[in-house]
Image (cartoon, rainbow, N blue to C red):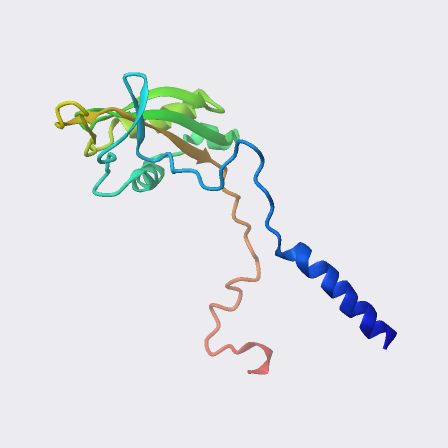
Length: 176
């Protein structure tokens, strides 16, 4: 009976503490608007009417497209040079893509492999903004940071037990 009373009182003391929500720190908000679709135009942050699109998709589609075409330089793979190349790309007003700056790179040859693919990529549909005064739409330059990871593939181990009995017809191991 004493144990039951002890557990009941403990439960009554703990429940109000569990029901409280943590207070936000001063100067913070619980929900922040997404930064996607924001550009800096004339020194002011403005929202795009329409974000740039790559083959009717967004940046993620372009990132996957780049990853599927970047080739690891053979000498870099042999030297086991690994790391992430980060480049800032700009979707121009005509839809072409240019490399603005290299933010991080473990080696110059890896950067060249990424920039070669970016510079030969197909055109995007440019981002569109609306002029506040005239109400007319116009294309704008939009930048993205493109990360490409280079990682050396592990060497395949040769298992001597695989294929050992391929030449023997009707072989059933373990008495099956």
